[in-house]
Image (cartoon, rainbow, N blue to C red; front, side, top):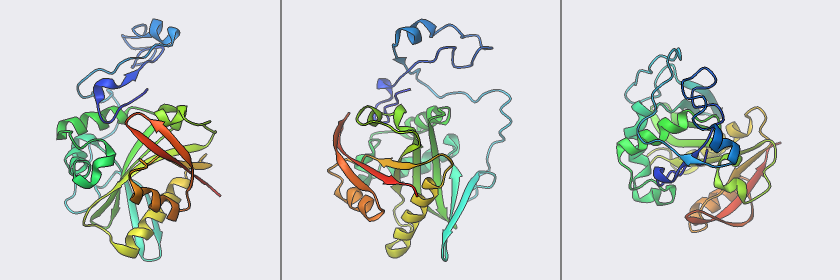
Length: 243
């Protein structure tokens, strides 16, 4: 899957046995394209949930992390963070507010509507190569974090991907943690990502024009390896080994 966050119509995918697997009604729809190495356009519109998934709808709690969605709790000193899975139908308005602010110009979604955002995260919800989480400090939203397998993104063609590489993007919430608390939260998030099973190295690729992000990456222990050309940007390819 090659997913373009800025323009979904440019996204492409292909699977050998249909989106619903061997037992589904579309098992041979993409087989010829898959065998030929061709990618197909991603269907427009929201992706319906799988029948019988056994996942109950989450209940949103004003001012805090919704129950039943917590995937991790980490802390440094008195600063405790809670990570929750993104549920697109519930979280799209919140995410939309983050990614359409002027400060989010490098996130590539400023022109998206709430529905666009929901569709993007609906699609990503079903990709085994991607995961999306909201980070909370008590009742305060701290950040949106997306992790990905670099092989599933354009950056995977710009360097030799190693087993154990984990890429991520994140955007912080305005009006949340400030100063030293924000810096501590950044470190906690990066440490949490690095502690995930099988992770050996963290990979990020901020736009070189986003000097603040590059500076923050260095402060968090990332090394800028080199600059690479990616669709829509010249990126600083950064790595941080996981010890």
